Length: 262
Image 1 (cartoon, rainbow, N blue to C red):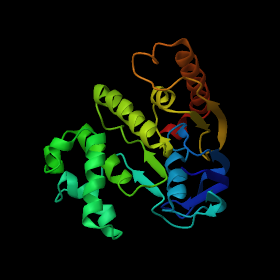
Image 2: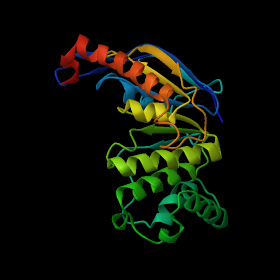
Image 3: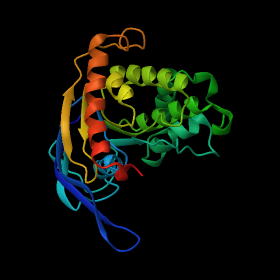
């Protein structure tokens, strides 16, 4: 488990005309060890930019990210990243995809196999270990992507809209699967989504960002008990109230300047 400190992050990029665009502006946010933090906000508000800065894929224009006090300057094995597009290697089997990261970092074959077996069991795909990604459904592919990220034993999972491409039923099932994995591993998770309902269902904390340039508008603690299921949480009055409160804040940002959503 690791604590993430996002300290006064701002980031600008140049558009095709050479004009500087501010994506994120002076955003600070602490994610406690073992917490499940989700970020929501209007399209284009800098959610993915922020995640990429935490991942070390891009450098912030100003500000800093620290993990357990250590400055983030590049990608590292302490952070596993799961993307919306699965990003699996089509020419490798499910097992080989999961073992890929440990193999690249010099983990011995026996230990790689042990880790793969553990995560295959955790994601319920032990019988599919020798299949290739093209033989799997979308939900199964995303399970493999999560297992591949976990196989390196990162302290932190960074997840950028990982369930956005799934149908509604599969998405709900994957949300429950992710919570089981999180409760079993107690990784710190930073999760990006456009779905407010998904954010409330999954998270210990939800951060709402303003329209571009993205700033922290409000932080909510989600005081709903774990373990959570679609049956015992989504019908709760507290769930509905929190979802509506967050929805109103995001809607305010869109209505104030709807052109930002284009």
